[in-house]
Length: 377
Image 1 (cartoon, rainbow, N blue to C red):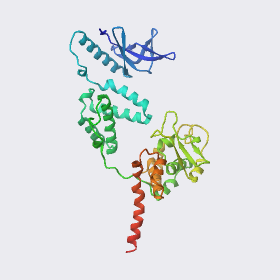
Image 2 (spheres, rainbow, N blue to C red):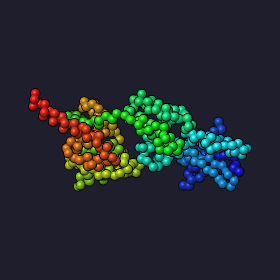
Image 3 (tube, rainbow, N blue to C red):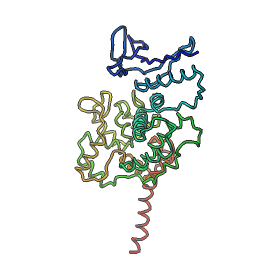
Image 4 (spheres, rainbow, N blue to C red):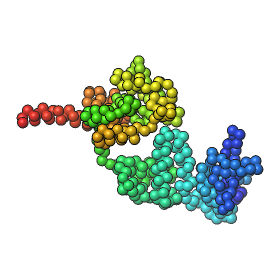
């Protein structure tokens, strides 16, 4: 017979080893977050997760809850009530106890963090926390398809694009599908519900590029020339090390670093022109990062710098990723085949690369139209 006493513990690191400790209580008799009893004293330990514990005969049952002490207390009360009901003979069906977001979110996010890129994890965490605040519902079974669709609409009303809103809705759906253990095709929303009209990628004209680079400092010229001539994503550029540039082979290697991995989890080699190599040679070749601040830290201001430079140059609609779109379009215009452009961009599928084909073909078509109609004017 199970012991109906359910207690809360926190696993913390004591002298290099993980140990279960009793949480310290505040004046309101609730757990003080991150404070535990260690060898007769109360100590602050922000690391580790909370667990519940009870016994079933001689067997110790530990259940990992997460970093939130309130969730652990709720779980302890819930489990204690369940054990008491079983002990006095009240029929209890497993499904009678609803799945709660407060019980499942931390575990789901921790698994996501360990298996995905850091940027993907942070995006998922922000989205799920935002959705939880939007719905104000804790019981999973009370969340409906309408909640997800309303969340998407709410995001659009607040200025998010249809694409972003749809993707955030699908992330929430992914979490709900996992914790509700839904079979494929039985989820609350589908990709069809997240459809949007995809605009053609925006690119810079040559006149805009000339105006933009005319007001750049040498360091800024190196940054945005690399965006333009190597087609790198923002985080790929920020995480380049001096050793990633091979000045003999004329290549840049996009590779993983501690705490960061490429978007597609694949390293790639990008061939670059000699003009860009000459620009990169002017940068310091020591240190951890090729592009860094005056204090040696990783440069991470490309978005703000791009906006400020564009404002001085009188160029509208400038942002770092637009250089990547311009890079892809120029390659396709010059006759580089789709598979090669896909490889250089680091796209997993050819469809992503084909988005840039319309821009490249448009210029060629306009030239033919001019040739046809200008001769008849």
